[in-house]
Length: 189
Image 1 (spheres, rainbow, N blue to C red):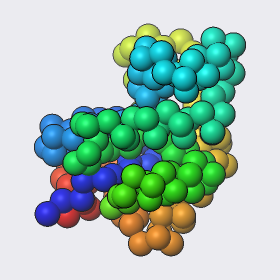
Image 2 (image 1 turned 90 degrees about the horizontal axis):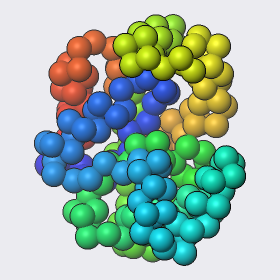
Image 3 (image 1 turned 180 degrees about the vertical axis):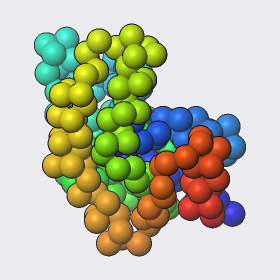
Image 4 (image 1 turned 90 degrees about the vertical axis):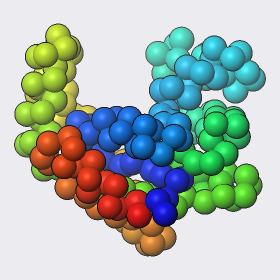
């Protein structure tokens, strides 16, 4: 049986979103990303959504406390009762600890964290190609490497966090999409 309460972890361009969509189709559980959660909370005009909107409208980062509140609302919805795929959340150790507390309050736990591993130079090349194809002029090598440094500083420590909890599996994110999907599928069994 496959794990159904999942976290996809990896640097920008590692393929988390692509693999999440494949898992959504295979498992019939929702992909939950930070951006989607925030936009949905704002659209629903919930109290935490209104708070998030204030930060977003001001162009500021939404604080962890608000992100956790939005996550709690989202993970409590009916479609997440039988599982979920977290993508882009948690991003920090503080968010990971808050997620553990939140999942404990709703009577569940994270079953598997799949970390997609790709060398930085491969990621930069991949993101530059995507930027060229999609016409993203703001994605240049400097901005990409800045995002990579931010990931290493704030999010990469979660690899050790989830390894220590016995739920981490590292998977190579290199290769064709279906090859990576096969490795991810093996990791959640």
